[in-house]
Amino acid sequence: MTVTQIAEHGQGPAEGAEAQVPPDGVQRRLLVDVEGDGKHTGGRPMTYAIELRARDGRWEVAALEAAPALATSPNSSDSQERHGS
Image (cartoon, rainbow, N blue to C red; front, side, top):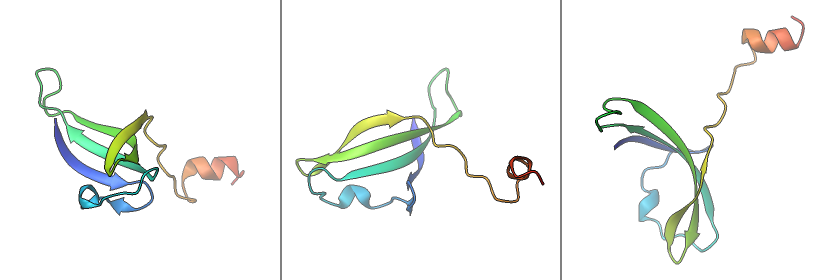
């Protein structure tokens, strides 16, 4: 797999995060986009939502989460249907 983008939940791109020495217990939620390069996943884009937790001066994966729901704009038809417009 090739990582194509990393974004921190609510923060935007997360470049440089690996260079920081975090204090124990700090958590971060990341959205990681990858492209498969195996026999059955070649060229296939995939997204993983992960939670990192700091321990002993390093980041460890604490959880692999379901991908977050996509935000919808207030003007979307789904939003208008719920509000009776």
